[in-house]
Image (tube, rainbow, N blue to C red; front, top):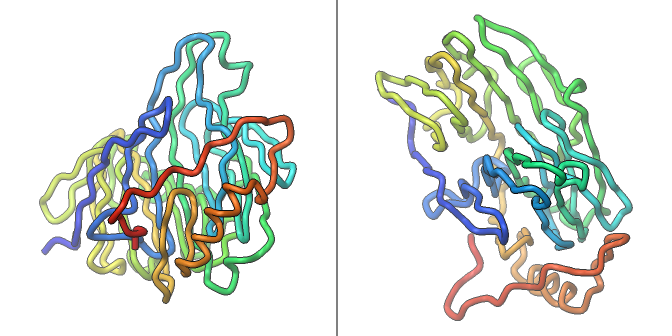
Length: 298
């Protein structure tokens, strides 16, 4: 009997000069554990002189996790962090009561064609930490736990699984695991999983209960403890999830909160430009209008 309870397909979403594959939130499933937002970025090939250009924009109530497969992003924020994100590294930015940041392709890559490909993930903060001071952590690829089991290559990007723990400073019980299969193999880690669990297929195929699933899908488990399946050769997947937060989360634009009123305040703070500045940046992303009769995503 299959342990797949729901399948979420990528939906194309325009974020300016860049199309992404939106995975979360989804109408039938707003969150998986504390994960409330996942975009698959690219792969996008930029022409010479071009690149990703996301001007300064704000966040509250969440941590962002950027994980690249190809390319590079220059991150700058209002607490004076400035670092180039490269493939395999983790950028973990916790907005708390409010942070502003920009994301751009470095000038060094714009002299030629360049590719950007990766994941952009938001993790909601526990209610008691939604107004914490903003923080920023960068973990190089070499600093993430890696191991091999049954011919498969595992990397723990964030959280804790079994005896392995990532140095990414998460604020709730969660996990984000990369598994790569060069020649195929069996995954059976259900005993180490907890809470809600989703499986994203980046490339290749998996077989679960005689059903084959391909790229650009999230499979949500009925029971994380029963996570067992086969990976075909040349397959890469990401298993993520954890304990769900007890309170509902509301999403509007880049804001996440357990309070509708707090989101309204954040909207006004951004209009008034009181949420901070990114050094050396003059343009901003304006607050988008909220269409009539459209409620905050729940």
